[in-house]
Image (cartoon, rainbow, N blue to C red):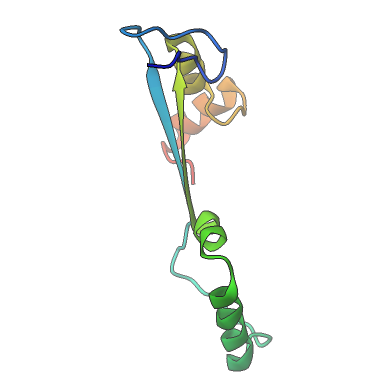
Length: 103
């Protein structure tokens, strides 16, 4: 078994030690609304679809869905939970108090 380290602080994580996997999924959001535009003709839509079909499937998938996983120690896990998007702990508390939804 190879040596494991916390992804963030590089602290060694020996076998049997307390460690966490933080998984982040980034998924494209679609609210069901397609804005109407006089500029988007059927021909332009067909061209857009053709362009997507020629694109690298991995890149297109990455633009729509991406997941990452990080092995971290308890201290770094706790820090992550306090401010996962690095926007300031006070702002996170304000968002949680107002609606509970960050969207």
